[in-house]
Image (cartoon, rainbow, N blue to C red; front, side, top):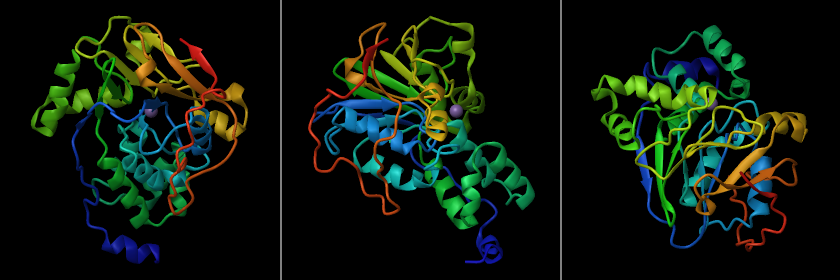
Length: 302
Ligand SMILES: [Mn+2]
């Protein structure tokens, strides 16, 4: 399809938000729950992490802190990845990278020079290989993602947000404002904070988020997963390790949620490539069940 004819067929506001802004998942009755740091297209590393814990598709669930594509080598697999995630009963929150793409196609169709500028500056240049209709399809899939996830687990309710929860706000206050969406003047500020803030980690704020047992966030790259109060920072820079093939530059951290105890967490960090999944057809990995041998997992308390 020629880009010009595609462009002509795209309505002015091409992307619309759908789905719940706060999504709650009931307790997993059949397996374990994992949460993984910012993937940014490092799906090879994810495959290694899943293999190292014997992830069982259909029983175990995976949750993501957002920023699923951009920078990493397999960003183009983000749509089959989202399908796989959903089919396995897990989910992802929206990150600021998802929102940058949504914003690009929510207002009037951007001038192609401005559009290409945004894409190139943010590691999103992989999207330039796709036509406009494909980019809008991806943006619409991102617009269906929630801003916050709540997961019921045997050790309490766990929250997942891309960047942070305002540090003087309880979880209930935070999610109530998000649920009111644009009807409430506070929504835009709180959504922005949830997607972009680094205040808690920059200031070392140790007060827990009241009203939730644990919160997982990404967005702020850390050398090792860090816990402040009950907030776990798990973006260990997977995309940089993925691009350089050098674990010194970044690894992917995946945490088993049900192994959390106050003040510590068990994590599986994967530094190297081993195999690939997510062909263009979106074949899910680990099917049939790969068992539960954790012997290869690099399990470290934090
Ligand atoms: Mn981010």
